[in-house]
Image 1 (cartoon, rainbow, N blue to C red):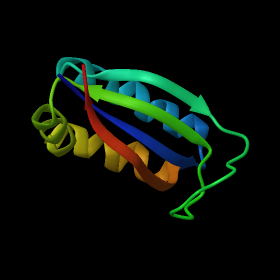
Image 2: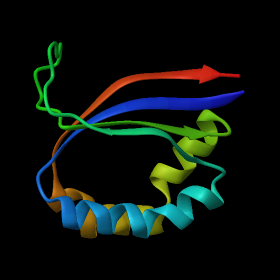
Image 3: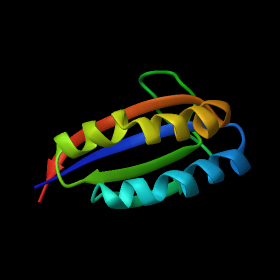
Length: 100
C-alpha cells in the first residue's frame, strides 16, 4: 500500500525550484518515492485554505513511515533550506491517503 500526498504550491522562482527538484530527486528515489502527477496551474477556481497555488503534484512513498523519514532526513532538510524556502511562497497539503 503506497502513501501519497496531493500538494499545491505557489512557486515564485521556477529556476531555483527546478534546482530543488533536481537536488532532492535522488533522495526521493532512494526512499522508494516519486511523482505521480505534476501540473503547472494557471487558474484556481476554488481554494478552501486561501493560499495561492500555481503548481499541483502527487508525490508517493512506499509508506507513511518512509515519507516521514524522507522529509526529516538531514540531507533533505539542507536541500529544502538551500532551494525550496527561497523558491516557494506557499504550500498547501490538499490531501494525503493510502492507495493500492
